[in-house]
Image (tube, rainbow, N blue to C red; front, side, top):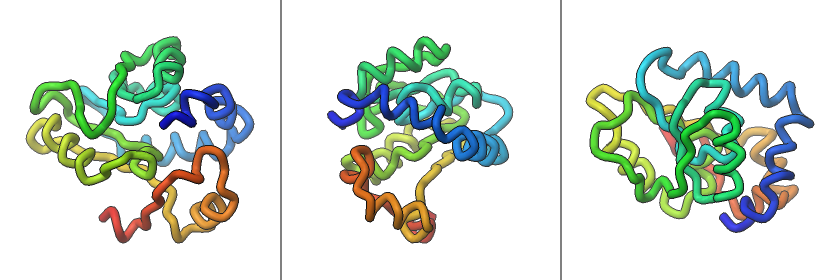
Length: 158
């Protein structure tokens, strides 16, 4: 995760440079995100998803990114998905958007997510499918951010 501390401005500016892709992602997530309830975003980063989606609480291991998320109105907290600093059954839904490929222990993150969800809570996982054009492109390009990523296919996460 050091890469996100070092290049947080570059990461955040991608969304400005790629507005169409970003807004398309927001639109797609809105379709599956619960309209009501208390939500958490794991890997909130700079708040680019949480803020427009009205997910009020986020967690991220990058102090620099958290500061930007807070400026966007997100209650962003330092931490990781593997060890969530929340009580059991706290949230109605948890969003993990383009994050699962960066965590050290994806299964642990999902177990922690389940722990903090209320009964009948929803988990929304957004991925870059490793078999998609974009997934293949990022794996081949080895960008600063994605060279350490462990991409999954839709089949692997469902």
